[in-house]
Image (cartoon, rainbow, N blue to C red; front, side, top):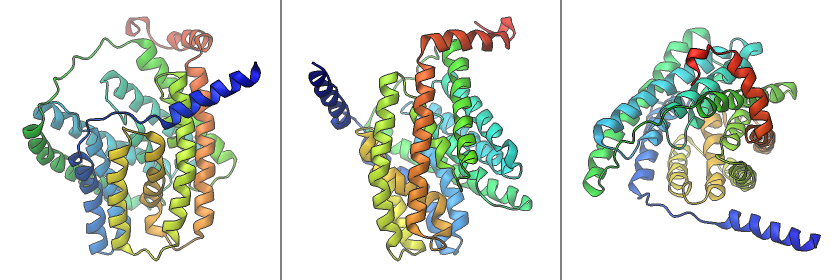
Length: 360
């Protein structure tokens, strides 16, 4: 009897793991996304400042928030996200100078960004890239006087993404009719406030755990935690955790192979553009497969400027441990988030901290 249940469970997990989702995403979107994040890298390579190109490339991720709505709504949405991306990076950079409160700053950013994303029903990738940008900024060793320069670089990258989004939209609106702008639903306390606070707290806990374990440059821990915990259901949380660990494990092997190659500034830039194209084309179809390529992409995005200064094996091992730790904390957070008793007990306490006139 138990053996049959185990077999049934394994078959169900295998089915979820091998299911390929249908998608109407055309190749033009991944191509434009690769341009938005890749052109700053090519400019940085030309001027022999890959560190500057990588920061601007982070701003290019804003393109991924371009909705499939009419042109005016697309541009307002992506420009608002561009501001948010620059603000998150700036706050992350500033938290670097106050290491003891870095955890609190990133937790605050996660709470605030998740609230805004949920209030305005921002689609995937949701708050993920805002938190990733803040995390990378928090672990970027820059001098105080360089803050305006670095924030300016990511802002220029975001501006380029907005321009590419404008011309891409003009082209795509000739091929596909835009989707109507959906009316915003009435915000609920549980969805907007409670979930955001719990998610932000566990993102902070994941970073605190990384600091307690003395992990170096553990920007990937809170990102992995957030990617797992924001599943819409407990099944979605588990699937995301399983997909991310498996995909990251294989992706780290790919990363290790890439790091052993004699990459120069041009080959790094072109490789990252190819990886971006593959990720954006496959992520809506199979997350675990996309995670194989997300891993080397994000590793290069954060480490490309310092490649060759350490052992590739050490770097790959560190990122795998970061992923496992972040996914574990995210799984625990997901269990709490989808527990009716936890929501009832903790939700009452949070409501007490908010004036009654503000709680629906």
